Image (cartoon, rainbow, N blue to C red; front, side):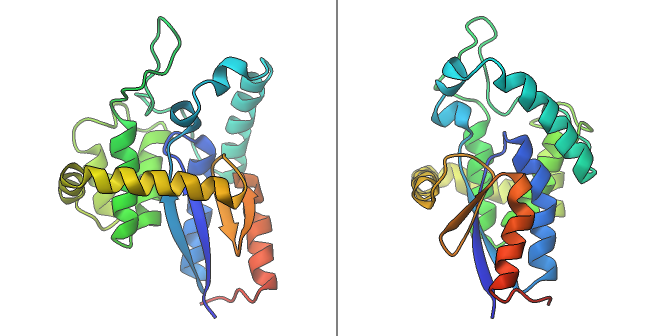
Amino acid sequence: MTLNFQLYWSFRSPYSYIVTKRVRRLTEDYDCTCDVRPVYPIAVRSAEFFETVNPLWFPYFARDVGRSAEFAGLPIRWPVPDPVYRDPQTGKYPKEQPYIFRLTALGIAAAEAGRGLPFLDEVSSTLWSGKVDNWHEGDHLANAAARAGLDLAKLDARVTAERAHFEAVLEANQAAQLEAGHWGVPLMVFEGEPFFGQDRFDMLKWRMEKKGLARR
């Protein structure tokens, strides 16, 4: 029996990047499917989070991101430019953002084309591996999309032509994420049970194995 789970995921989340290859391998090696549901990062959904969070949060976050990537055997560096623009003078995240809607909508379009996980994997590796500067310029995203089996120009054209559709799907994804029981990413949900964080991947797989997960 093919099992199914949902993945709520953000292009600005280092933990989303860190878990993606494992999720992709899971669907390739085992009889299961993943509903890819991209959402906005917390800086866009709830920018006030960074204004009220405990000051110890960021130092721990920075340390944990580095060691989590090292533990997973992945290179990591904060994307250049940041997928979410932050005003350097005010430290605020303005409502108008130059990159994140496009990235998130492209992820939705890739999912609707049946290539969601490969697209998330290839694009997040382009952003987060530290091998690429100015990922938004030149052919970086086009090459990532091609490696995922997609045509970036066609995806961009659809996002432009059907903006209202992608905004509606994005809102639906974010509402479903909250309904599933958490606000953070990556969030994996199997049969209504939420597993928050890249460090819950093994527990997700364990739960699925208890429900009959089998190798292909």
